[in-house]
Image: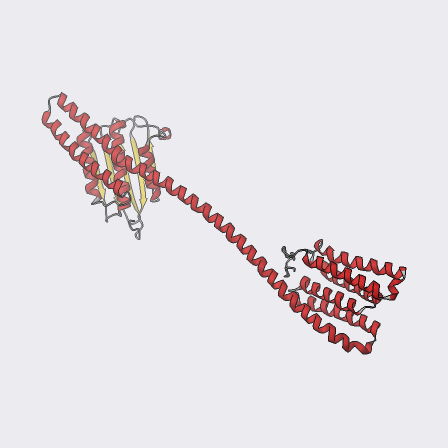
Length: 405
């Protein structure tokens, strides 16, 4: 009925009051039986004393709910109840009282102190000693063999029953506790799954935005620059130059369309060729469309994984587009170098510059560039001064065990 261990006990919730209700009925029955069968209890004084003692004994049983978590109160409780029963049995002079009440106290002692073997043994021995003494005083010491035949098997039965019941109660409580923990863990897993799903959707949206910007937006921006250049050549009568730009624009349009289809088919699968060749082609398109010379230096000691090549090529393309649209520069440069640990990319122009702290929130190019570099644990910084140009610095760690996903 009680959870018994070295920690504070807790009454078994399903049968919290059942034992004490049953015990109350038993005590009431014993009380009535003793009053009827014992002549001495027909005297008012003895009857009043017997009634008071029985009420105190029953009240102490129910008071266990008050001090159940106070371990130090158990020994005084058992000692007090034992002495109280000793007085009750001497007044009643009833063998049923001796057997019934002491067996109940033995069971309660085992339930309270289980897990504390020495204290349990002392409590049980104390109850048996009092029971034997009560029997000897009432029925003679020579008849103790009858007491032993009746009491000892009952005490053994009570001990086994209470021990098994306590273990069952503990197992049930552990199962309920485990079920509660599993339910809590299940709720947490459900919450985590919902959070992961939300984060996955957000990340996928951001990735889609970057891909659309890096394919369609940059491609269309390049078309506009080239068409503007072609229009300027047509207005000046330089038809061959305009025709050459238009042909390059057509080639770039096909390339952009191919990139867009590849992004739509599978945004995660990117297959790049030589990074140096890709950057030279990008710079050539930039110079043809804008007429701005761009110095290119590349020191690539080893092939790079596709994700890093993608970040670098997108960063260069976005930077050159920004130079063409906003910088009003007369010269630009792209420098890329690698060593055993890092890749360093520097893109510079001598244009009008801007305040890096005042970048509009809808400037998706720089935002996408920052996100891409952050996802591969790189560092991104912009140095710009009005009328003195802009320098964009990117540093990406190179993990020798890195494999493209």
